[in-house]
Length: 174
Image 1 (cartoon, rainbow, N blue to C red):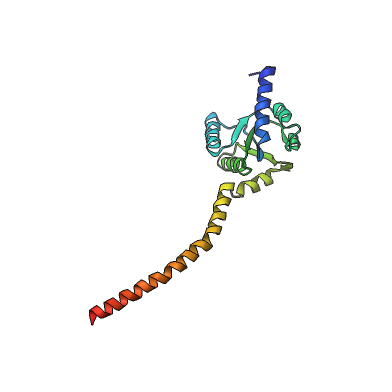
Image 2: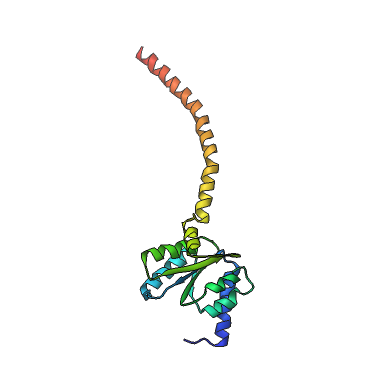
């Protein structure tokens, strides 16, 4: 399906808006994937907040011109699927996990602002914890000393009550 000039401009504008807020862009070749598999991947992408789309490389090259992702244009060759998200880890995790289960999806590379990554870089990014996981770990680390302090303070009245109960039991037995 050929796009006319206005449709191409609309696609470039849409992709430019996504790229403007992107934390990372991941490229993958989808040749050989069935429609059901691509639909499944798109559903997972929607659930994880990743903009996932099959686009013409020339349109994406125009969309990334003048952005921190401009150097990514060298990797744009062949039938590619683009994963874009504000969370830098989300598209890499999504596409790497899907590629493990489906050999037809081949990771080609990616980029973070001003940094172009090869396949190994994308795989390394996919193994990193997401922003939410890191925030949860930070909160747990910050909360641990407070929780320990509260437990320690709670032990004083608990020991006192146990001592009184022991004295009461001893007097009742005598």
